[in-house]
Image 1 (cartoon, rainbow, N blue to C red):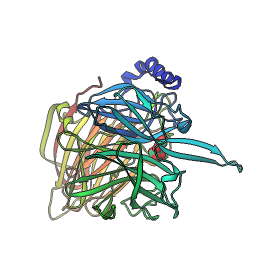
Image 2 (tube, protein in one colour; image 1 turned 180 degrees about the vertical axis):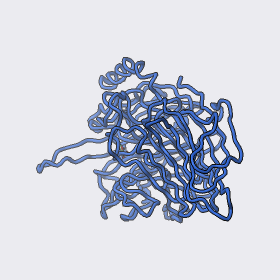
Image 3 (spheres, rainbow, N blue to C red; image 1 turned 60 degrees about the vertical axis):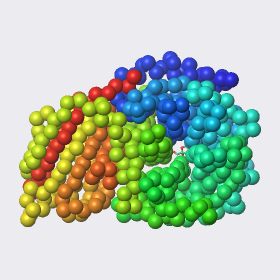
Image 4 (cartoon, protein in one colour; image 1 turned 90 degrees about the vertical axis):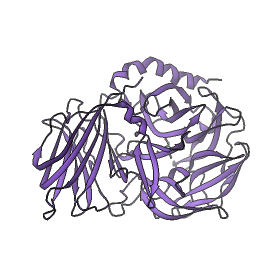
Length: 496
Ligand code: FRU
């Protein structure tokens, strides 16, 4: 049964979505209208990949959370489906928060999410009560279970907080269902709890898979846990992170814990901890396993801290990153844009061994819907260049640049002049592996974004840009002598 509240959201979508069609990015998911945040329920279902998201259709700011819904076959072209969930039950009346999805053995589609209910204390403070709930459907319409919530305070380990207990990521392994869920424990920081069930309705607490111990931020949101290339990987999104050198930045961050899952203790022994994405805009990543065995990740390409900053005329806010293929090499997470993007490449323009000193542009190298790789190396081995800059989305007034400095082996991205009508953090600097002044920069640009992939996916960095689409020049500059190769394609796909 579709509740009045869900029907209202669906009617609203029908009425207003057509008006924003021409303003959408070409190949990044948005809500179409209104606000979105975290990706939810990113999983295969009946031969397609479904993606839900935190959604408030009625304004470009966060509100009582619904789940919006799209699906795809190739991660590039997405079909929009009607809103899937509305906060229309007693136990989720203040929001259907983030969660996951799984295909049931009988072919039905199960969504597991956090139901939020707030109440005001005597002293005026508001408390959230967060429990885990389930809705089952056919890929379009979903029915919430009468037995909801399926996990509540009674199943929490000692010291676990019911006020910060959210974002179940569910998967099926053999005859069992598993879920990892973010929680806050008695030291005030995050833990990731592992639960198990035979039928996806009756759940048992198994273990604390990993704990923050106030080391990487405080509360850990939006966990995902999977095996990849012989390692076990936990993704979390910490709140209140303190910067650690140039590796982790303050505020809402994203962290990847790589190690080995101890099957006796049901605990992740972590060996390496790194940022997932080194840019300004990336949060709450979620992954799925494709039919051909690829682990593909998508994230909210946005930062909570700057989520009130947007052009006034925008009628939708928030977008997803490009889906990325993950791998582990030398104990580190690698990510590259899904290979399906290559089918969208138009004419190739390439240059080899171009000497850059001072400021240069190259005929045919421009555009705003771009897949461009620039390989940089020293022009003079004896006299290392000081820095190299790649400028994009440029006109007389606007530009964004990527700067690489061999001496410190750092990359800095600066979008100060990208068109934001607000005074916000616009630069991010991060360390890269030193390789004698040689570096490979692949950038993917869509209407409101630039995603950078360094050295064939060794690192990624994502940025929202609101530069007018006409600002399409690309240029290069350096202090010292640099040789570059450039391979550029315009991306020609269109949202259906
Ligand atoms: C992360 C988050 C989740 C929560 C959702 C609410 O961005 O705070 O923990 O489920 O957003 O919209």
